[in-house]
Image (cartoon, rainbow, N blue to C red; front, side, top):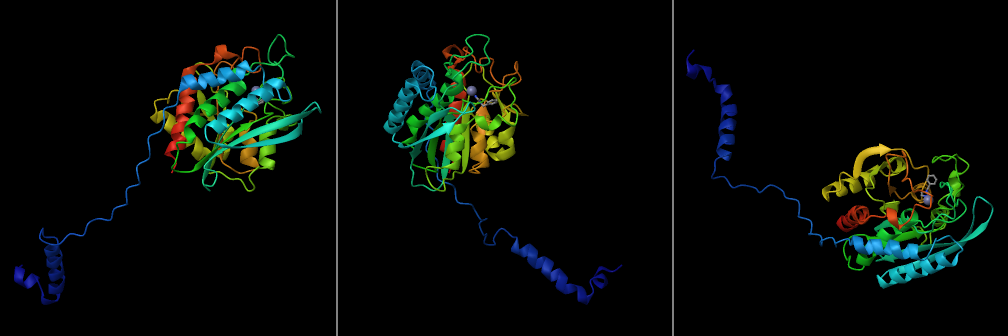
Length: 338
Ligand code: 1BN
Ligand code: ZN
């Protein structure tokens, strides 16, 4: 077929358009730069978490003796913590009250709520209990005597006291609150490590009290992180099931940060259902702050560390590397939050 006859007159406008399109793509045509997203300002470097300091804070708590609510050792330890928090630049609200434990006994309650940059609306909540169990109900001996609570009570509070030391220097991002809860560990003894429905509310009385009566009206935070039993040697942290139910994005953030810092082998990407209750439950349920629990899962017991609620929960189980893995991860999460 003759090519000139193939290009019939009604086809010319289309050819012209194609030709024009090619012309527009020649190198001489002016280029419009692609749209760019403005770079976020660089964040200040995260301070170094000092595991020796965290360890010394655990030791200091244990040196007071068992921190059983209503005892002089508990009062002395709380006074010392308040002084430390104020020295670290916090505004400290002491929430006092009375709670009734499972025996019917009334106990004094003293939650310590330490705040940095309290005027900022956006906030992060960190928490740990500082009271210790009044009995060793999982031990074979001296069951009625109180425990040292180096891991259960001491370790979470020790890590948070070390983090507190750095918070006055945090000028960017959300304000930080640290809640040291009281009367967490005065719950009804159970046969196994699991809880029945009746006993579940006998635990975490300080966190329940805080959630029902927030000392700052309308208190809210972007998210919360609870530390409990984080100090034993070779502690491993699985994704805890209640945290996964209420705050899966916070678990993902913390576990990802831990892996980025080289602690991926301790922060295992697998969910275990093993915590019947803890302080994060009322914070999630009542205040609706998505809050996770970083708590050791121990392979041999299928639940907590073997020293749990025994006299073996003493300084011999505490290890700086475990305190460091948790403390440096939480400090990094806090510092990277914009
Ligand atoms: C955690 C540490 N808890 C007490 N000490 C809460 C709890 C109590 C979890 C009973 C499971 C059973
Ligand atoms: Zn306990």
